[in-house]
Length: 167
Image 1 (cartoon, rainbow, N blue to C red):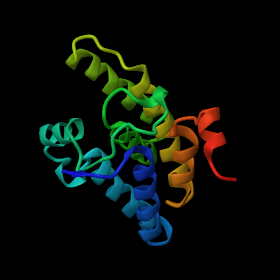
Image 2 (image 1 turned 135 degrees about the vertical axis):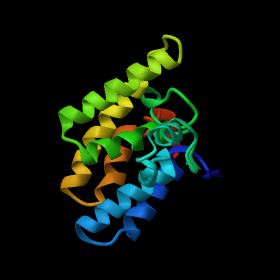
Image 3 (image 1 turned 180 degrees about the vertical axis):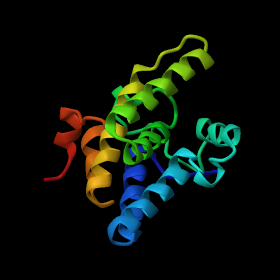
Image 4 (image 1 turned 90 degrees about the horizontal axis):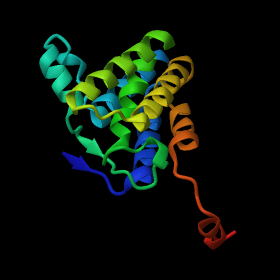
């Protein structure tokens, strides 16, 4: 397991680095999605033919974990909000929006049962944003995702923090 430096900023830097490395065109978008899906969400498509292993990997800790620092609190329910978000960017990339949202709610219902009645509205929000960003990624290019992510998932800065920044 690789722990990256710190929270949201490290996650965003990782997405920017992977987007810069992606080849041009559709093959580059697919490469980018497969790479970030495996690194950040534990989605190993080569294991899809073994559904138990595949689902176990997706529910577990991915190779890259970024922590929750700097993520907007509305999207955090555990120590690695990037995992859930990227999983649904992946789903949104491959499935039409309606089907992707069905997968999101099915996953959350399974989690509700698995975790003894705990419903995570923050996971649902993160998944919804991830699905929409996956659809955008499919229509555009990897370089778009870091900006979408920053705009949606970054914690708001407080007035004091903004005032402390050099102009």
